[in-house]
Length: 163
Image (cartoon, rainbow, N blue to C red; front, side, top):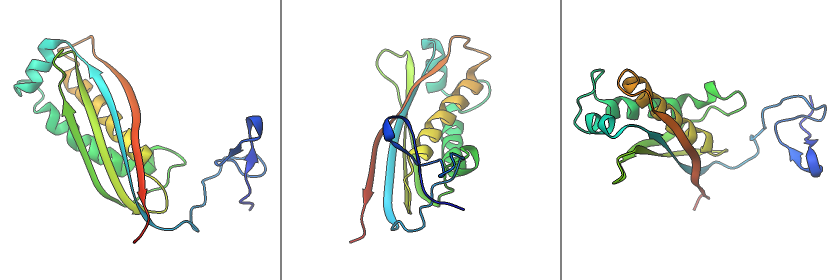
């Protein structure tokens, strides 16, 4: 088994391909364990009336934000099972926050995820946002046919070397 990398377009190294061009999980064994964090955000666009129902906790299926927060945290913890080449990571922290702009046309979802590990938590933060947004969608789909999930992106990542 080879752990060398495969050259991609413009000579760039493709880290998820082995020397024979086969899909391969990146070997992070030799990397140091450091504290790593990632922040991601996204939005779900809804009708103003739907947002008001969510804010008043009057959606028929229950407390939308509480369920979406829990779903996002659980998704972050399961990312290694959902994304084929993502490493399963022992998360030390995960949070989901919801913001309502004055326009009341969307809910902005922000996740922050941390670990002490050999690889970053970007995928965990992004997955948390995506699943939280999809949970809002699921809980409101009978009321609002206009919803759309959008703008999911990595906002920041950081690693703090040991002192």
